Amino acid sequence: MAVSEWRIDGEAMCPYRLVLEHVTSRWGVLVLIRLLERPHRFSELRRAIGRVSEKMLAQTLQTLERDGLVHRDAKPVIPPRVDYSLTALGREAAEQVQALAGWTERRMAEVERARRAYDEARA
Amino acid sequence: MAVSEWRIDGEAMCPYRLVLEHVTSRWGVLVLIRLLERPHRFSELRRAIGRVSEKMLAQTLQTLERDGLVHRDAKPVIPPRVDYSLTALGREAAEQVQALAGWTERRMAEVERARRAYDEARA
DNA sequence: CAGGATCCATAAGGATACTG
DNA sequence: CAGTATCCTTATGGATCCTG
Image 1 (cartoon, rainbow over the protein chains, first blue to last red):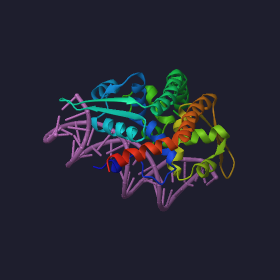
Image 2 (cartoon, rainbow over the protein chains, first blue to last red):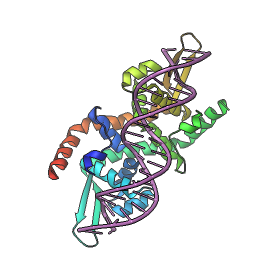
Image 3 (cartoon, each protein chain N blue to C red):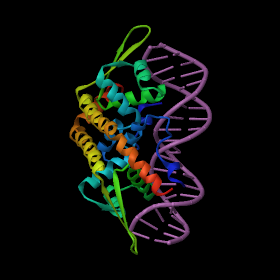
Image 4 (cartoon, chains in turn red, blue, cyan, purple):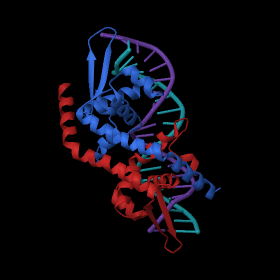
């Protein structure tokens, strides 16, 4: 399958929304946050994130690489070794994403309180 | 259909990831940014965002309301009038989201340059 | 006008098997 | 090990019709 076929976009959308969707995508968020900590190999990322299929991880990494956020360093050795790291641009994106994720964690208790109130109000 | 059935989550995931997915969801991002500007009625939001179906907009608003980020004010008049606005919590979330969206817009040119380079490299 | 209900197309995502 | 290819299931999202 060509890269262009599995891209998340069906276009016909302002281009910046697309990047936004890439970095805020389910696995994009988690990859960026992990790589902010340090570079990771493919299988390290898989284990660190957990419950991500090889397919989705590969897709996510390729999308982020194409957007210039992630750098892929494939060493020509056997067995293969590929390291992923953030580019300067990717680091900026990851910091924004982490800020949002951090806010979410900090406010989680309030959100859960709101949910209980909402659910009770119509039960 | 019950609210619990269309919720974005299939659970079995750490709860904060869920909130993160709500606020970073395709329409969640756009709704929060619009409401940061000022309160909107349902159909105002539809027009402001563009190309969102009624179903998706309603779903998104309900999810955000349940999470305590959006306040829904339904006036008992005919024809119905419903205003949506941000709660204090929602304003915080929206500001984070807007920061991310702002970064994306500012860096768009760089991302497109990276994409061209990527595509050329394998064409 | 603000949505709920229903039906339908497509896309996201996972499992498995396979390869350099 | 780091993916690709294939098949399959489920979820997302839109169109349409309906109602208070």
